[in-house]
Amino acid sequence: MKSIEEKLTAGFCILPGFLPRAGQEAMVGALRRVLEAAPLVRPITPWGKPMSVRMSSAGRLGWVIDKGRYRYADRHPETGQPWPPVPDEVLAVWQAISGWPGDPDCCLINWYGEGARMGLHRDADEGQAAFAAPVVSISLGDPARFRMGGAERKGPTESIVLNSGDVVVMGGEARLAYHGIDRVMFGQDPLLAKGGRINLTLRVVKSA
Ligand code: MD6
Ligand code: FE
Image (cartoon, rainbow, N blue to C red; front, side, top):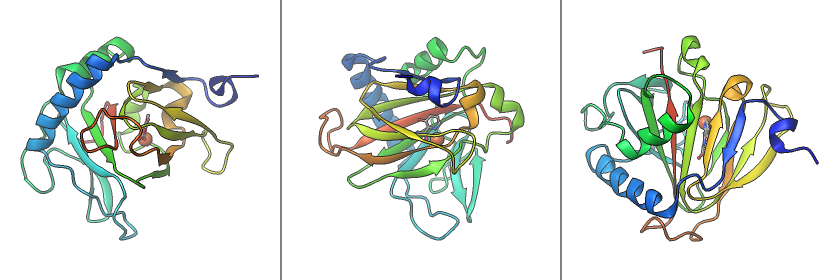
């Protein structure tokens, strides 16, 4: 049987268990400090519905939904403060995997509670010049069913489970592929004190 990488798009890669448990715990500690300065918010979609996922960011830019528009902003929408720096533990993963000479501009932090999901989407707000860089994503906490597609929204998809410590890379042809989270298996992994799942996506941004 062909692997999901062969069937779908070149440049999509999963590194299962890339982060050992101690590294996951250290990362959660660093993220807790980031979220004290830049609290999670529940963005309202352009269709007026609150997302089920709660979001914040670290780095030069954060991804926000502002008056119904997706954009990168240099300040937190509620505190008005610049985003905290990306923790060193997170930068180390980017530096080990991305093959990109610089650091990411944005570390989007998504927190999934019980019942949260993320519809099929592309990460496409970073500007044409940024698409040469991969997106690197880190999963922490409860497992989730990740859906991976290709260049077309209506094209074939396949799903896989992402566990705590898994790292996903979407580069090359997969950089603009459709993907989403079908569901989170809430309460299965004790990494996060309140349960749930954190996903970090590290991106280079050239548009803002
Ligand atoms: C998630 N991940 O795992 C959502 N985007 O919760 C993403 O949206 C994502 O894993 C771009 C590249 C890798 C990803
Ligand atoms: Fe994404």
